[in-house]
Each structure stands twice: as C-alpha cells, then as structure tokens.
Image 1: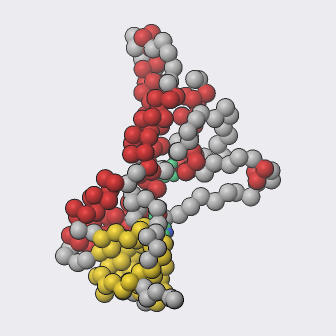
Image 2 (image 1 turned 180 degrees about the vertical axis):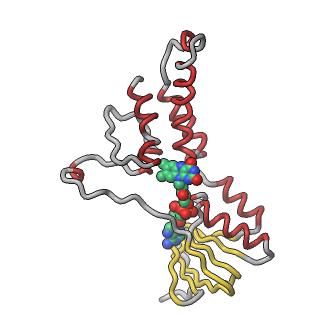
Image 3 (image 1 turned 45 degrees about the vertical axis):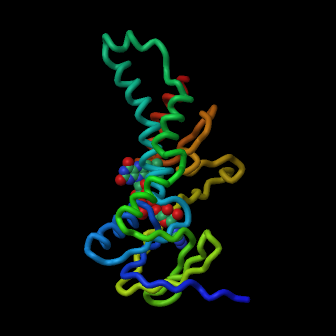
Length: 204
Ligand SMILES: Cc1cc2nc3c(=O)[nH]c(=O)nc-3n(C[C@H](O)[C@H](O)[C@H](O)COP(=O)(O)OP(=O)(O)OC[C@H]3O[C@@H](n4cnc5c(N)ncnc54)[C@H](O)[C@@H]3O)c2cc1C
C-alpha cells in the first residue's frame, strides 16, 4: 500500500538548515510569514559542526600558545606545548558533541517549523521530503522555495590520491586523534587554516 504524503502548506519552504537557511527562515517569520526548514542532517549545517566553529576552536589554542611564545617574559613561562586531547575536547564543546538540540530549540522559540529529511523540488513551489521519521511530506509554498543546500568538497584529480586516506574539511574538523603526518593541498583560506593546527600538533 502506498501512503499518501502528508500535505502541508507554508509561505516559504527552505531546504537546508545551515547558516543561510536559518537566516532566511528567520527573516521570513520576522516578516510575519510562515516558514519550514527541511534538514537532512544537523540544524546549523557545516558552519556549526564541520567548518567555522570547530576550525576556530582547533586554531585558537595554537594561536594563543604561539602568541605567548612570541613575547619575551611570557615565553619563558611556557614550559610545555599543546595538550592535544584538551584541544580536541574544547572542539567537542564548541560543536556541542555534534548535537543540534540548542539550534532546534532556537527554531522552536522563533516559530520556524523543522522537518528532518531529504527534500527535493517536484514542481513549481512544490517540495517532497523523505522524512527521517519514515513519513513522506508533500509541501506547497505560497510564495517561494529557497534552496540553501550548501556545498561539498571535491577531490582533485591527482594521481595516487585515491590510494591514500584523504580528508575533506569534515574529516579534518572532526578528527578524533592527531595524525602522525598531514599534507595540506590547496592554499586558499580553508586549507591555510590547517597549517597552524598541523604545525602546533607537529610539536606535541
Ligand atoms: C574549515 C572551514 C572553516 C570556515 N570558517 C568560516 C568562518 O570562520 N566564517 C565564515 O563566514 N565562513 C566560514 N566557512 C564557510 C561556511 O562554513 C559556509 O559558508 C557555510 O557553512 C555555508 O552555509 P550554507 O547554509 O550555505 O550551507 P551548509 O552549512 O552546507 O548547510 C546546508 C545544509 O543543507 C542540508 N541539505 C543539503 N541538501 C539537502 C536536501 N536535499 N534536503 C535537506 N537538507 C539538505 C545539509 O545537510 C546542510 O546542513 C568555513 C568553511 C570551512 C570548510
């Protein structure tokens, strides 16, 4: 038996509850309209759990240590180097151990509805969601559907890379232990971010 999708109607449907989707939905409800967020993973998206937040949490201890080591008078007081386990624990704190309860609470307080699942557009202003709860949702937007689905890293076509253990930003920001060796490919800001923790880790 095929179940009928659960039909719902909202002013705006936002697919993807990362920083962009959250902000769009917030502005929608502030303007007096109704909004629903569709999220397949964690409310908060990459920034909260695999990008901005954990990367800065990992960077800060090394930066602070380097700062102290650069100042005569303070440098002499620094007798030990980074405590890698403490650095990772601090990162876990900033990602709330990859639990999105506080961000879900914010949605509830703000009046934004959340449907957890994969969404896709099936017709103009029409979205279907394969809910993580097992339900299928058929959604209609009175005004607009917003695609805020972010991006994913791609692996560059480099000979031999497929035979190695390759980290994207997710693996790097959620690492559970310090790698013995790490090669960073790319010189843009996200890759450059890894030079300092890698360098600091190398000293541990
Ligand atoms: C290491 C690193 C550090 C960074 N540091 C900073 C920083 O300090 N400051 C800064 O401004 N930016 C930073 N960025 C960039 C920032 O993380 C991104 O710009 C931001 O996360 C993009 O947000 P988004 O909402 O567009 O996408 P995302 O955060 O990727 O959110 C998209 C969401 O959509 C969901 N989704 C996708 N497809 C579907 C679907 N079909 N159905 C349901 N859900 C779906 C995904 O699960 C995801 O949660 C950093 C990025 C990296 C990698």
